[in-house]
Structure formats: structure tokens, C-alpha cells
Image (cartoon, rainbow, N blue to C red; front, side, top):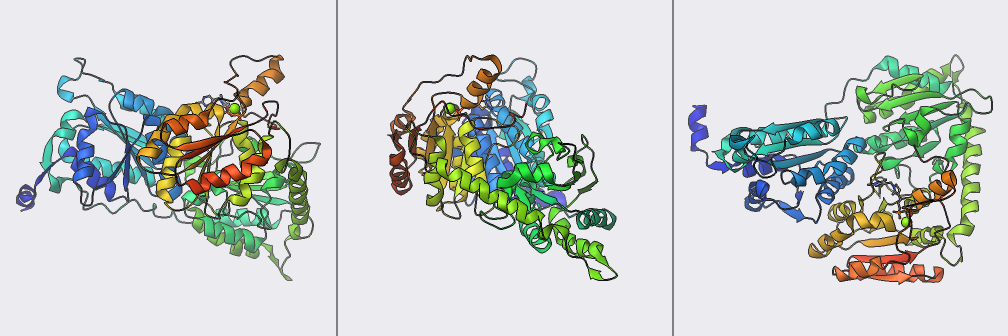
Length: 569
Ligand SMILES: Cc1ncc(C[n+]2csc(CCOP(=O)(O)OP(=O)(O)O)c2C)c(N)n1
Ligand SMILES: [Mg+2]
């Protein structure tokens, strides 16, 4: 009898059941900061065979950022465990970041006991109400026997397109209580996997193909979900077969490697101004993409826009679309070249695609011009140091499989422009939520995900303040990372705009020349101060060779503002 079988299985507490269910989804690390409400989850990790790695940090937001970066880099879901009350609330900005980025993260949390609920237990707080708007689902498990299947549900939901964070807190007695281990359901889980691809709608694909076949100046934009959905090879192949100019953003960067002849990200302004068709795949039509409005300036007609997303709710509703598609992105890109060829084929056979002659060369020339225009600043001998000189020194030192992380304002905007990844999964920015403080969490995860590759963390001096204490985590867990602080002594991305609007600024100054390198040294890492442009390269080489967490603190010119056209507000 099933009941007899269950009773013969050894009893396990909720933590054991939760860890087993998480492991079945490919989780290898639990990011956390200690709290009594979640001890059983630690015991579950320690007693698992083999044990699950525990990575303990100095602020809960670092734990969730690390789980998020794990998901973005490895494409297996990330796990953060937060203690009840302040542990959860400290993680809120990072959960929101994961929500905006569509990152599959499961946050398991402790929760005051049910039997005293309403009496004022320590940290008694109904978390799901707070987490619901920033997760795919937030709920409480009250029964030990159901903990395994609840955790399994959480991972399944997080990993299903459109991906995102899921929150589950577990009442104290459910987590500490015992249930037959047969009740976990973990052995029966089938792992995260991708959701079964939805059937392609041939009508929608052929409509999009006709738009492409009829375009004179098309541009394809590849965003994070192309990488997250495992569609990077199909997307690259489709672009190459159709000879489409491509702009990448977010985790889509690197799908066309730096230097690829179709990659026209550096000619973005001209491409978006002059295109007659913009196909955007795997990223929202948000402020980073002009809210989905392209061209239409100087009396020219606006470009038609096609939005390709991994789930129906993701297709833009705020701007007019010539066509939209929701479904598996790899299947879409695999079907596209054939559909375009069919659409472009008339009685005389396949027509030559119009943009090969003039449009693509025009954009390629614009890319070349932009690179030529940059070269003076990338080698600038200006003193104080121009921030671009740092990127001029860094780029030649980067291996093809380097992971570069940006956390900051202007300093990181320069990086977005001048550090072009050679592979997808090599770039981490905070994404559209724009939350400062991702740096150390992302760096911890990157080092775990790529144990032998280069991991470079670019930090504004302001951004550094949010997470620098977690250098202690790098040191304790022996995770070498090269950190470069672009230290202009100000909140640059706020100071310059406030000056422009009001003619003065307040609350935008930091300590000039602050020794963030000494903070890292004090925490057990190493670092140095750089004030002369010629010293940047040798300092970076020492950092890469050091094998320890190492911060190169580069004092840059506070008068330099990144030339931006919008702040996104
Ligand atoms: C958590 C959070 N707080 C505040 C902001 C607003 N903000 C955006 S950029 C920026 C300045 C960043 O300064 P720094 O890291 O020193 O880089 P810089 O612009 O000086 O290169 C601020 C305060 C934010 N994005 N996130
Ligand atoms: Mg700054």
C-alpha cells in the first residue's frame, strides 16, 4: 500500500525536503545570510549527499543578486535563502531587479510560527503581501509534508517563460517539523527544463517575414531573453542567413561577437533614426529602446516595429506594432530565414534582399566612424584621467570568456559602449530596474559560475558603497575578482544632470580620492591607487595576476560627464 511505503521512509525535516527539491532543479549553491528561522535549510544543505554549497554573504541583497546572476550566467535557476522579517525586506530591491530582468530566482524565507501568529513573535511579518507585486508568485507553505512539492512548484514557475523570481516563505513549525521523506516529491521532480515550446503560429511568422522581405532598412535587436531562452545560436544563424544588421542589449550582448560584420550596436543612433523596420526580440520596448518609437524625425516616416517575446504578456501594448509574436524564441529564429526567403520569392525566384546594397554598408561605415572617433579618448593622456582611458587599457587584457560586470552610473555607461563581449553570457548590467549595489553579488556568482575565467567588476565610487563590505565574502570563500573603481568623487550620473537642470547641485558629492582600495585591503584582499593614465595598464595586469580580490582604484576627472541623450526619466 502506498501509505505503508511512505511510513517506511525515514522522516525528514522541512529543510531536507526543500534542499532535495531545489537540487532536482540543478541548484548547486544556496546564497544566504544567517537567521534562526531558516536553520533547517542549512541543515538540509549540510546533510545532503553530496552537501549543497552554502555561500554566506554580508547583506541579503547580495545573496539575492548572487542568485540572480547565477541564473543569468548559467541558465539554471538561482536560490537565495533569507531569514524572516528584515532578511526578506533587505532582499526586496534585488528581487525587483530579478523581476525586471526576467531572471529565474527562487527566494525561500523563514516565517514566524503559525501557532503564535498575531501574538507578536519576533519578526512576524506577512511577507507574501509585500513580495507579490515583484514576483511571479509569492505564498506561504504551512505543512512540512508539502514543503518539497511547494519548492518544486516554485522552481518550475520561476523557470517557465517568461521567467522571473518566485517567493516562498515557510512557517517555522513547517520548516522545523518532520514528515516522511517520501512526501517530498523531490525524487519525482523532472527538473526545471524549458517550458514546452508553444506551437509556432505560421501566419504570424509569415506576416513578420513579409515585413522583412519588404523592408529597405531593417534592424534586428537581440535582448536578454534570446540568451535566457537558449535561442542565441538560432538568432545568430538567422541574422547571418538574412544578412540583417543587429544591435544587442543586456544579456543579448555577445550573441554576435565583438567585431562581427553584422553587429552595428555602435551605430545605434543612426540605425534607429533611419530604419524602416525594427524587429526587437527578447527585450521590452522600454526606455532603453526609445519606448518602441524609431525614426519619424525630420518628417521621415516612423519605422514599423515588430516585437518578439517569449510569452504573451511580454509583447508591448503601449506602442503601435506592425506585428507581434510570443513563444519559443529559438523556434522562431529557426523558422524565420525560410519564411523570409519564401516571402521574397516571386515568379523570377528569390529576390535579393534590398538592404545588402546600401543600408548595411551605411551602418558598417557608421560603426567604423564611431570607433575612429573613440580612439583618441581610449588612449587619452589627460590628467586627471579620462574614464575612457580605463576601457582603452582594459579591453586588450580581456579574454574571450571574460565576465564583465557593471555597477555604477556614468562609469558603467562608458563600459556598456566600449566593452563589447566576445560571447553571450559575458556581460552583466543591472538591467532596466537600474539598481545600484548589484556589484559584489554579481561578482560572487560570476566567479562561482566561471571558476577559471576572468571576472571583472566595474564599480562607480558611489555604487561601491552599497556592497563593498561583501569583499569579505570574496575573501572568506577565496573568490578572486578584479574590481576597477572609476573614482570621480561624485555621484556623476546625478550631479551633472542636476547641474544642467538647476545650475547647481546638492547631495551629489562623495569624498574625493577615497581609498576604496584600502577598504579591500583591510577586508583581506589587495588593491592599489592609480592617479596617472600610464599606470592603469600595469595596475590591471597586477590585479589579474594576483589571484585574490583586488581593487584598482582609479581617480578620474569629475568634470567629465557621459554624453547621454536621455536619463530614462
Ligand atoms: C539603489 C539606487 N539608488 C540611487 C540610484 C540613482 N543613481 C543612479 S546613477 C547614480 C550615481 C552613481 O554614481 P557612481 O556609482 O559614483 O557612478 P558615476 O556616475 O559617478 O560614474 C545614482 C545615485 C540608483 N540607480 N539606485
Ligand atoms: Mg562616481
